[in-house]
Image (cartoon, rainbow, N blue to C red; front, side):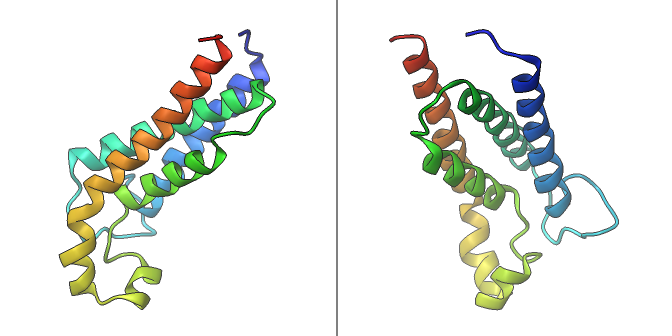
Length: 136
């Protein structure tokens, strides 16, 4: 599979875009817009980096293969990656639905699980598409 510069640029743009968007909104990338209310952990950064890389690889694969199988898993994995790194009490949407104590009690402990599921979904789709493209 020969990749063009456009496909590589598109994948790199998605990786960097996901990293910056999720990183800024979750305050893993320090910025004046948001203040994170829960401590940053190494797992937060790991899930941010893995989600970003796998989303970019998926976009490269998606541009080289005609069929779109796996899109739902890729989208779910990317969204799950966001929830894995997001600050539970900084999310106005979640705060509107639940109290901050409920989010810290029930959602925050599940963030690593969201990260594992997200990376597994994205990694599984990328792996399956790679095997299919290589004829295995």
